[in-house]
Image (cartoon, rainbow over all chains, first blue to last red; front, side):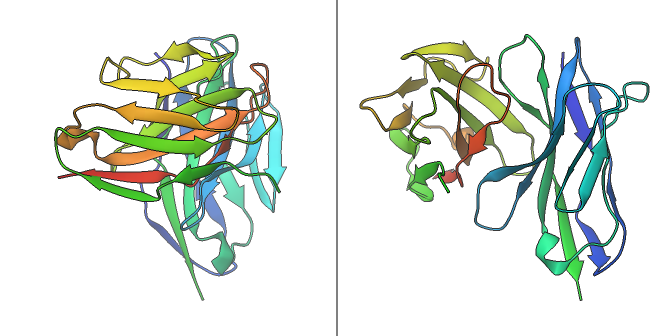
Length: 113
Length: 114
């Protein structure tokens, strides 16, 4: 079946530190990959996505590259801010498999001054 | 900016009772979903709904659960005879059409069964 594995949190960083949140996936076909973010008290918001191998999704300074050879989609940001504190979810949709998202467990990020 | 709205934000219910979780999807969206997240676990797909019928459901979505679009704006999840293990955060989502991969999520309803 399809699954997504994320690094466990919480991840605590100082402001301006470099962020990496690891995500690997298992899929029976050709997935599209996503990162969703949930800020405190809010719903899940799409942060970025990539639909094919070697695509790079980017938004708000965050980036993730679809690596088919390592089945990974790691989220990175060069300099985090306190406002980036949230829970980050890696997810996939299997192409041709309906529109249901398969999520990882989420990684909580705390950024401190 | 259009958003998906869920009510209530938190619902406490006694075991065995029925609950209805409500969602107002984005107005021009046609494809609707429910997901849930048990504390500390993954966000899990429950059901998708299109053209007034269920298009896909997971094995979690058994006879205890039902969905309905009672009018042009609401999308509800009914859980009958709630159990302790139904305690979770329930997320509603919508997307423009079946071909769209971008789903817009509500803020969630935290259901606590006591």
